[in-house]
Length: 110
Image 1 (cartoon, rainbow, N blue to C red):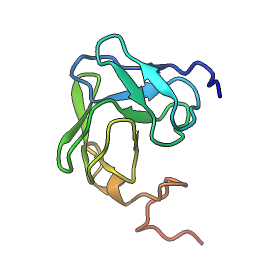
Image 2 (image 1 turned 180 degrees about the horizontal axis):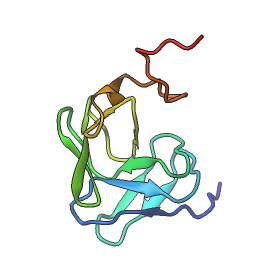
Image 3 (image 1 turned 60 degrees about the vertical axis):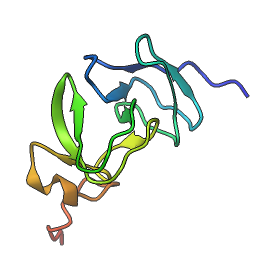
């Protein structure tokens, strides 16, 4: 089976995530200039992040060369990085958002 070309961008050499520029299915392989190939472990949507290195629980998630959050669980190379496994460094509540809707779980909507 042939997969369409999928592109992601990694801004800084210290980044442990890259951002997808298109939807990608699992097993798609991203070919990096510096970091080698990364095989996706699950489908990842346009604009979402993929780990380009293993990230231990408690370790910084780095994008643009700066920490943007902390891994709340171990994240394998090739896995999706989002609210279910990364707590934002910008909003203490971000670790409590619903993964699908993005709504805060501590909020009630009537």
